[in-house]
Amino acid sequence: MYASIQFDKEAHFQSRGRNGYLNTHGVAVYNMGVGDTEEVHLHPITSRGEASDACRIVIRKSAIPDLIKALIDAVGPPPGEIADNSDDKRYRPSPTSISTASGN
Image (cartoon, rainbow, N blue to C red; front, side, top):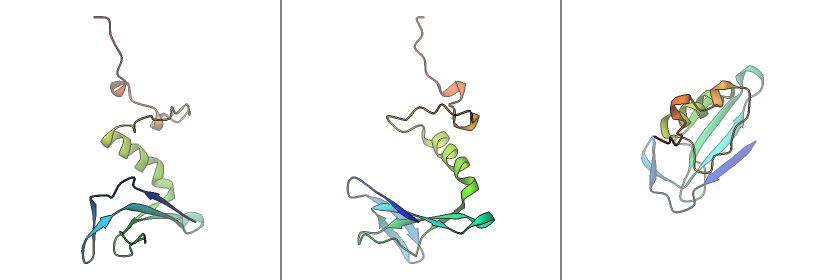
């Protein structure tokens, strides 16, 4: 299975590949493997619109929730975040990250 994320504007992001830096215009996501060896491969999309084989991130599918939590912890929730009402406490904001208006 394959999906991709294309950036809105021409990206000035660069990914480090085996032969130097690649201008990155998006991210290709591949679903690889079956059973206990399920993995997700993330490849930068080059200016030619192709996924680069020179640069990739491989992550176990079971680690994706932890990756998402780490991304949110590092950079904060995205604008217009969809509220998560799940029972999994890993996806709920910590009490220190909730901002409230006080009348003081």
